[in-house]
Length: 228
Image (cartoon, rainbow, N blue to C red; front, side, top):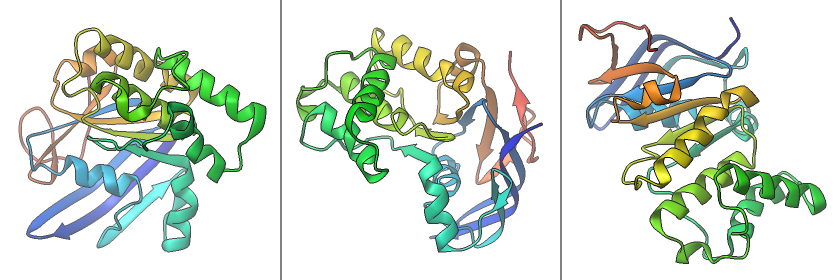
């Protein structure tokens, strides 16, 4: 198997909370649903996977490379994108929001326009380039935030509660886009509470409780359960 991310003996402690991951492997081109009660450590694990937090001990490997040191994290972050639960959009046009990360990667001109057009089409927002981002509806804002992540074509896409509060019309569009990403080579990790989402997306479930991985039985164990 081709594993994009491997965690070994990972320990992270902050403000009385401990996240303890003995072993976890994420395959390339798969969807994972990270589930558990509030306070279980889902957002913390996403931030560790996004290399925005550094574990107190243990090993995190990304694409076969052990992440070690600030320079490593900064370099590898370009291959990882995290969309927060309440993503902030710049008070500019939708186009400029999507162009921001591309400019940092020196993607400009026709290539930039094509990438932005493709990303907006993927989230069913064609023709929204000149809309003011902060005048959009909640569902439209969520889709623009997703498009802003997609335009960077990350190897690993991390989403924190991306579909919470979406209306019935927006949710299928959003999930259809997410379900297509593994076929394009992107590994997707979605933190949320929707127990049916794994079935709709054809994903694998990672359950967390009190900072530890748990199987269906409720006993702590470093394993995944595949759902069909």
